[in-house]
Length: 391
Image (cartoon, rainbow, N blue to C red; front, top):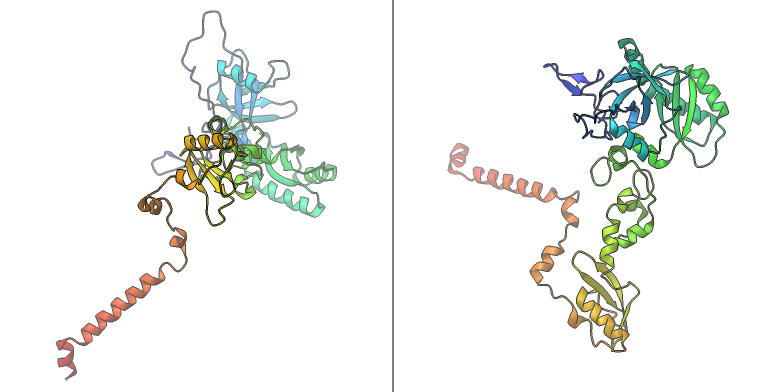
């Protein structure tokens, strides 16, 4: 559904606010839970769950209790009693699935849950939108104050409360920071109640969003809710080069997607020999260079043959060779077990693509075009009409 900040076309239909579901004023959030229980009647004697899920800026969510006489639907803009102050949010989930979400996030159903006052009026929504429009300018000025006070912290985001009387400043810092002077100056500059909240680099990436190396939106900003620890062991299991530039995400930490297929790689690696296994040949010793899980190939590097490269051997054959070597048998040559590829297959597999994007790739075309133009002009000069006109 469209919100009041969405632009409309000539036909009156909303064209979107260009915030990719993070504007906090509509029901198109990236982490919105699909209510598959909607429309299913409750059993007799069971009342509807009196807590609803409310979404705020950048997919921040909270749980709030409603009055027994009120009913809310997904997309309703509601006013919340935070005591002190009021806030405005959008209902993102209702019904029994809210109970499941609370158990997943380990939120207790007790007296500490805040209450929903009512559906927001037009005046409250206008104040809320006015507060949201102040956030970018407030963040810029706050960063200037940080730079002047020389406080070692990075201001990531600013979020205003719905009544425009309080602002939450999200920041990142490597160590403990004394920001008492900063809070006093921010409160005097913006005439607000200030709340400083420290977050991690992954939480910052989830709030800010962006495009990953895969070309899609960041998982943490669209659907990922739990941040599990990622170690370099995940990259080793997947035979990836330990390059921190390629393995790090926008947050500067190891990419969360390294864990997505880790279990499958762990199961596949069990069928392969240990990377520490060795094969003794007539020329010397051969070690395992790398393993191709998808092609079921093990690459050996013969240390006795200084001029040779990695030797690809099928998995079953590699296991047999290692077992024979462990029993004391010396292998005459690993090349006799290598996979033989046809020249055509090699040329298809390994092609030179380095020069495809060179800056001079258009120069030859320009030279050819000039040559054709010169040839055409020479032909016209040698034509009989040109000779008669000259005479």
